[in-house]
Image 1: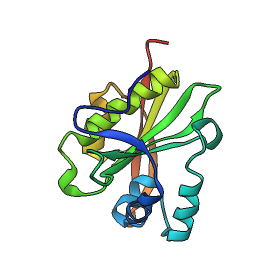
Image 2: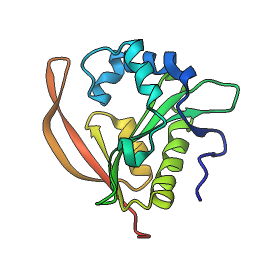
Image 3: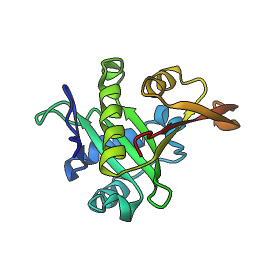
Image 4: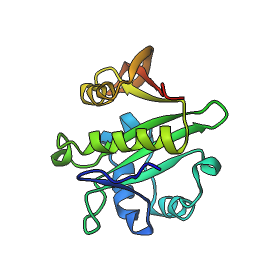
Length: 177
């Protein structure tokens, strides 16, 4: 069993108290480009989402975890497994750190490492994939650090600031299975 605790952070299930944190992230237009969001979310919708967050990954086809430093501090970011496909043993993976001052502090790296291990050893997934804008150097560096390989480019995939940008698909195959 792989733990969801690292040296400086841990991953935990979402709580009702995360409402304002998730509301802030989901309504941050700077993040919309990586989350494929186009409209704001209401507190009502996020509250409904949190009320259903107890569903397991097999039911919801998604697992969203809060990235925290310790019990006394609020969440710093979110990390997700999405498009969970147990038949083909794969899922997409994504991460967002909310505040600029928390980026570049190894928080995302440690969270990604924990979730990769969890996905491969607890969920027995064969592969993970990530969709990353080709101009997002920080995310590309983070995912390639853990062995994700670029397997393709989706041309003109993301409309950002009235300009189409390419999106790369990165894949990590679990060689242990």
